[in-house]
Length: 269
Image 1 (cartoon, rainbow, N blue to C red):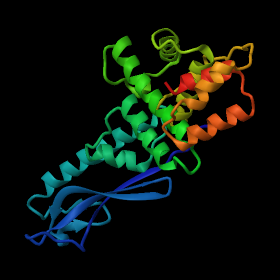
Image 2 (tube, rainbow, N blue to C red):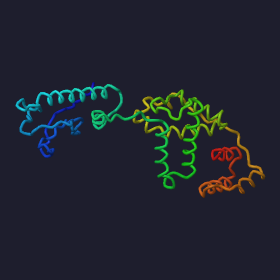
Image 3 (cartoon, one colour):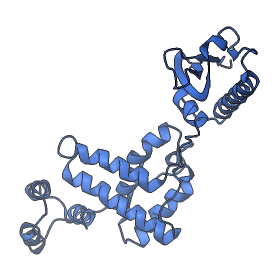
Image 4 (cartoon, helix red, strand yellow):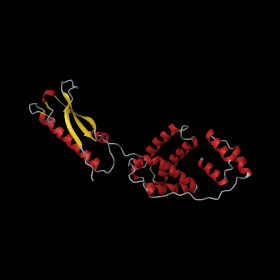
């Protein structure tokens, strides 16, 4: 069953506000899904010439015809914007409508700005529920995406709405070939990218979840033990943070396999 969508428009005169000429502003009131917004039209009239019942200026006022025509045009624009949003297939709010009525349409979101914004959120969580090593991984991921766009598309940004499975495939191959990153480590970067992009997917900025169309799978690896030389190298290497030193100590104490440790430190490069 189709949802019955109700929206109500009306014009009213704000008697509480008066300009220098003593005229009151006319506002467009929008009520949608039990929310109400008042949008100033930029039109004024003497309050005594305003008809609340019809939502128009009465004919006795000399500028009534001109003002009423403008009100009709504003109402028509509001109806058009609502229909465009309604049939776009994307979720929207009453504030989205108001922004477009005011001519404040949002610019298309770019991938790089989005990733930078999400990384700023991650930075605030660093040391709370995200480790320094995890945050550094997101930072490296951002640098990889910037390099990928430059090398593959010769652009500095990319529309977020255009992200699809083909884009993800090309990015994965870029990590594997151009960056010489192992399969399992590249899969981890794709998982991180999915985590970052998920809010945009849920908000339908990216309309179809491209991660449902393509799967990135880790490969089973044969693990071996560290040699004495490799243990000495790991013990002596200087790491940039206490978190990395702690992880190094945990790896050594648990006799982490040579391959998994090598892969871990490859992530840090």
